[in-house]
Length: 209
Ligand SMILES: C[C@@]1(CC(=O)O)C2=NC(=C\c3[nH]c(c(CCC(=O)O)c3CC(=O)O)Cc3[nH]c(c(CC(=O)O)c3CCC(=O)O)/C=C3\N/C(=C\2)[C@@H](CCC(=O)O)[C@]3(C)CC(=O)O)/[C@H]1CCC(=O)O
Ligand SMILES: NC(=O)c1ccc[n+]([C@@H]2O[C@H](COP(=O)([O-])OP(=O)(O)OC[C@H]3O[C@@H](n4cnc5c(N)ncnc54)[C@H](O)[C@@H]3O)[C@@H](O)[C@H]2O)c1
Image (cartoon, protein in one colour):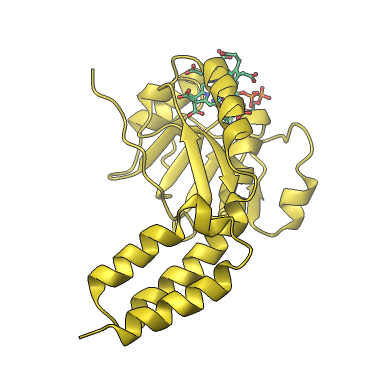
């Protein structure tokens, strides 16, 4: 059986339409807006509290029903209504190269959505290809409990340090060794890690042939 590949996608440059205004539509819209996207929303009604999303000016709501005959021109279309026959129709009408998401039959769309944990620059995603969203949720909770609590702060430090090390003068091998050592628990958890980094950078530069 073929399986889907996980990718990290920058969504801010995509044109995205979400059809439907229930719990699933809201979840998908919220995560897309959090990731910097602007959403065109097509639904006659909004279920639950959308106030904050609408106030963000990142969501344009067209208050009407989607119809079987129409074709959306967005790069991505999220079909999030409770009407599977309508989703079948949109899929038939889909524009060339358009990516379709179906909330009702995951594997009938171009992609589906994993559960994800975000801690600053760290992302962890879990998927069972739709076999069991409940199992996915449990596994996500297990993983959340074992991830380091300081991952976000450590990654902020490592990102800056990596830029600095790669930009400075010195042997490439020595720099790579330094990057590896810096990511180790001993170095990261050391309260003097900034001082150690300064000294190590100076040494790499001094030792260059
Ligand atoms: C992980 C999580 C992330 C999120 O939604 O953000 C997520 N579902 C969550 C929970 C959850 N969803 C459902 C239940 C009820 C119990 C059950 O059915 O088991 C529970 C449990 C609960 O709520 O406790 C019902 C359900 N879900 C899908 C269908 C349709 C179908 O099976 O095709 C139906 C039946 C609808 C119906 O029949 O009415 C489909 C999908 N749900 C996915 C993700 C994608 C696959 C992920 C994977 O590959 O494992 C996928 C395939 C589609 C997609 O979204 O692309 C989120 C965890 C919450 C969290 O993160 O805290
Ligand atoms: N992917 C998931 O994680 C997941 C989880 C639970 C349920 N589901 C599936 O997703 C479906 C939607 O779930 P929900 O809880 O958001 O449902 P819901 O009933 O709360 O919302 C459905 C929304 O679709 C809108 N709608 C209906 N017809 C429309 C049309 N022609 N054009 C535009 N909008 C229209 C309604 O106004 C409503 O806002 C469920 O029926 C189920 O099949 C998926």
